[in-house]
Length: 130
Image (cartoon, rainbow, N blue to C red; front, side, top):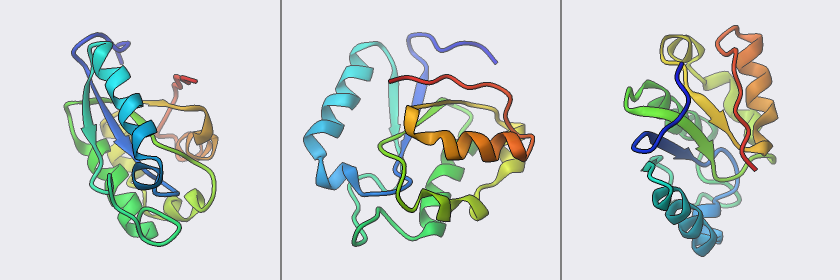
């Protein structure tokens, strides 16, 4: 798996709180920063969506991640936030798809995801950006 370079695509997903709604300006600034660095951004299907205190149901949030995993153009996956209720997504992640389509994972709050990918022997590298 090659390191990221300008022109590569980063997929963004929201595994917990709906920060793309509750802190839209911050999300847009972060997205613009990555684009200014030369990356293409693909927003997950839950971007801009709110379901109470979270971005979607556990299955919907896993579907968002699984779509990014299966997208061959996406080289790295980053989350908008982690933490509260992210663990409810774990049973629905397609670990086999991740083995077939390895990606860089980035952002400090995703330790829970790193550990499960490693446990499922689907992941052997991490790239933490903070």
